[in-house]
Image 1 (cartoon, rainbow, N blue to C red):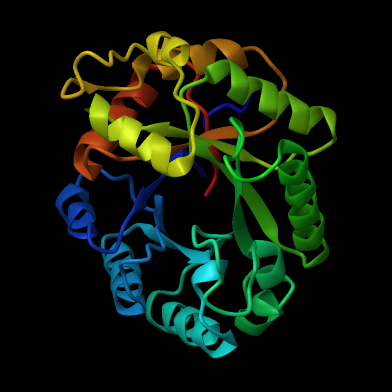
Image 2 (cartoon, rainbow, N blue to C red):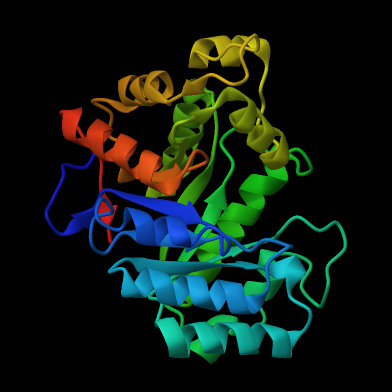
Length: 288
């Protein structure tokens, strides 16, 4: 596991267009240059995504627009959005995902189709983030997930792009460690950021888990320290974090970092992960 270095950024985080004011409120505790992913929600428009990117840049952080392939209406829609993001906020990297809609709004069935459309060359994109699913995906077979991941990595390497993998958040630390081991055993040395949820109510965590298709069996919830008896209880991911550190500690698993899902608020989430990194004798980091 990598040692911390002043040129490395320890974690990334995520925000919605509607929640961008939380970044402004929390700017004092967000380390300068922190990459902040901008979710591509169906109930937000391009103007909100572009505004969020501009606010993130103005706050001294690095905007990372997420582009939902199935939500793009056309090639023109794609180019107008990405062109405006580049001209107004100058993001260094983009994250390409498939997106939630069962039926695509336009020509892109998934992120593979979007990547193959020439979007990287057209917009001069040479840093890309893709998604990993250590606990699986509710609608996609695990074998197909791995095949798609390898296709993207091969395609992006051929295109000369720097690549990172950011995982969905989860509850099962053992599954995450096994998944990273599998990547490394197959010769995939791409940096991985492990998704961890910030402090939030138990009920909210479970709602997001259902939304993202994360397994939430009673046994895993108990391991995570959650109780179905008190959904209003506010909890942090300390137990999950510690289990991940124990599973990864002393292992040669390449560059591992963190991605914060601040479900309970950006400032609370950033304060929490800052404290965890400060307290941990082995904080992880990835190149920014």
